[in-house]
Image 1 (cartoon, helix red, strand yellow):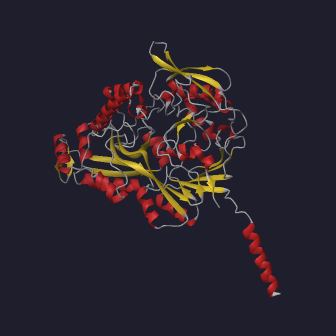
Image 2: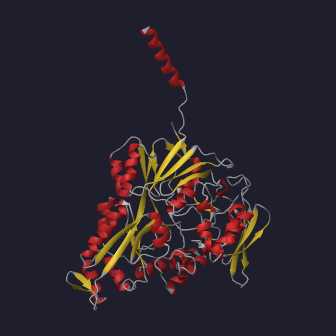
Image 3: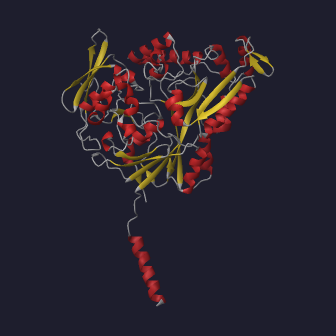
Length: 552
């Protein structure tokens, strides 16, 4: 009898070994923020971008090789292929006409084809002054759209720029679901749109996945779009879980509560490096340097911070090199302006702020802030007190904030630290310019991306413009405005590089924001996951989620 049991057990082992390894159906992704909205055109938050990249597609995007590619179109318009043509605008200035043809196999998640009507509606909404679209400037530059048929249309742009065919910000919205709500009350559309009211409607999405469940502040569930005709995604269910505390995020990874941590919104570098040293065989850690600018926005409406000399003194009072060595193992280079050395238009001779506390102290004295009773005070006896805000639960930013507080305290500056949940911080505090003095966070850009929305005076968010624009410091300098305008329309590469150099010099002198570091992001991935390529710019790895595969 024992021999029979042993034979049966041996046969079972043989049969089990001969079965094909089973693929993983579910993938749980950990990120550190929960989206403040799911509407593609409202607010600027990487959490939203990361999730929606799996469910929607922009017209164009930069891939992992930093090449511009079509996402929804059949091919990129260019002057060589005849789909881009120079023309005069109604006021006689150089413009350009771009003809796009949408791919024939695009469908919303309810089976309705994606057509030029969706593009038309998205443009109408985007340019409306009451819509509150973050990048309304892009839509207002489109003077007209000529429709050839359901798939082909021509954009007429109000200027000819060096990046004329970059339409990464144009993400179509389903007209058949959203037009009525928008037309009913454009001013209220920001809070009454379908993405936030009924986010599980499959017709809102045209990518490989649709969102099927949203638990606010906790997680989102994504399932395959049955009308998606591209490469079929491998996972039957994706869960994107928000864990705002990075220590808790790591703990969930190690306990098996999540399968991976996104690099775009994951562990701070120093935490990922410590995890890497543990050499856990279940994971591989990929670190990608990219166009991520960690900085401190300055509210220039503050009477204290409106003084450029004081802002420069604050920079001389920061030992960022020491922070980089001690906190980030020297892997996050100090930033001199908002332009990364990885970008081809970086100016190596940009003014630099080395750590010089003596110089900082003298500049503060000259600005009228003298030491008295252990703190710096002005002639009226007011103490130099600044509030520094950032995102709660981010260990790296908490540490950086504490170091900044300590370094400036040596200069006699009283720094009060405050942290907010990311969805509140980005949707309300930063977007509506409600931070009293300083806000620590990051901008993520694309290659040679002109920072018009963050630096041009017309892009300051106000209640009157429904908080559109991303110039959160409230920076207004006519010289910067002219540089931004000229860079966009300068087609000669050497001449444009000179303009970029002037912009970086002006930025480093005026300091609308205090540059800290260029961030390196760490992706903590299960060893079985293949096909994920970090991009190093604002178009996240999830734009190609259909290429992800699980190797048993």
